[in-house]
Image (cartoon, rainbow, N blue to C red; front, top):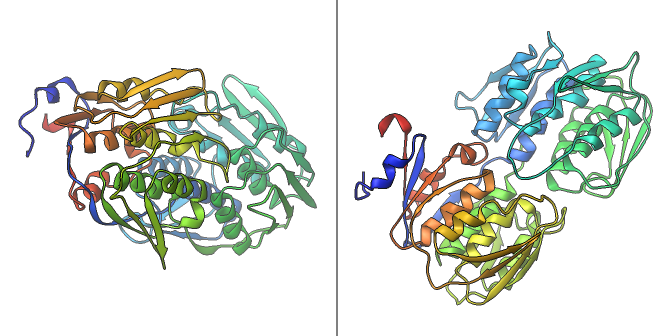
Length: 436
């Protein structure tokens, strides 16, 4: 172990990271497949008995959870590549119930509801769990499926959905933008009779990726990526092969890593077009970002500037990048402001950043970040998936040693973090609980 036998190690019972700050990141990082696309695409496999082959699958814990759920339903999931990066799903299910012990681990599990209802005319799905970053009601999912003819009740913590016949197309108007509800209704509508129109649909690139795959399977979807999506239902979908888009949040996260360490990273498979608001904000802070072919290049050799951020649905600044930017802005000269409009509990990482020496004031949905000259290593705990990486970012520049606990949050959505960072010069090590 390269660390100096930190006594902090004894404080933690699970896997944790030990990080020694002060090393600029330089080199290349390969951006993996998008978590927020892959999960929905796996659920889309339920819409056909033929084989859907997905490549560029991220090897993260949330994918393992989704595979476990599909197999619990009796669905076939095969590892074509042998390393989990190419999966084949298909067949017939033997069960239409998604149980609490699986669904409670990950909110995206609720995305099996639409496909099950559309193809098998019934589903019993536990109310979802996931990160504790705020109330994320599924009312919009249920109202949307009811508009297509689904009969839905809540019983003993489960969503019970059924229909006596094929779903029927209808008009679905969302009062609020919801990525998950848009995806659930879009998948269900592919097998509905007639036309479905989704108004105030989510516009994220992952919505487009899902629609592209469904269209390759024989669906008739137009308008994905815009506020109005139109789906003309078909009687059946067929198998296909689809390569999952790269993960724009992972890409933005490593861009912040380059910036906070004043480094120079080439992000393979990064796509500026998917990161409009994030790239604009990086440039406002004085960070150089460019694109050549499939490589996004991030350099930071200047004195950085403070900025103001407001999280919003796409194409606005993503809430999934808020924590990472807070870490970055904590060591930028001047005062920055971050307004969180999507989730009410997404400032839970603030006390942990303060433990590292950050100067952050929170009043309601507004966080005021007063830049400091340096952070200092300390033991900290991750509170959710994106907060996990914000603490890694802070640890990469903190003086001394940072020990990050609760890294199981990180493993849900980021692949091989310590390997990718170490290859670019970071001093970071995972200590497994059975090696303490």
